[in-house]
Image 1 (cartoon, one colour):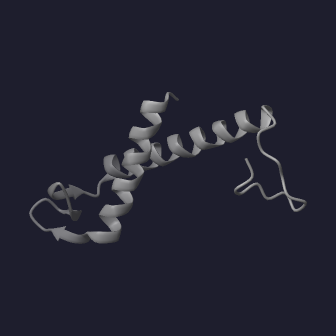
Image 2: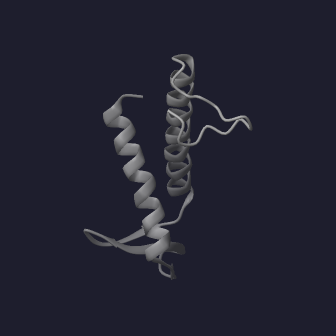
Length: 92
């Protein structure tokens, strides 16, 4: 994944997080959907349908896979030094 695409997907993860952290779920009886209502630049109400959850899962998986690839590339370049217990946090 290119850096610009990674940044965009990471931004999307933060958008999903913020929607649930600061928004609220409402029932739209006319459409029959639950919606997430939140503010991000403008007020938004998004259907919590299969399409929404599929996009969310794909986005999160893309970011996770990119991070795992970055970690693997760093390991291969001997950039990460592991602690005795195998922990690699903060060790670059």
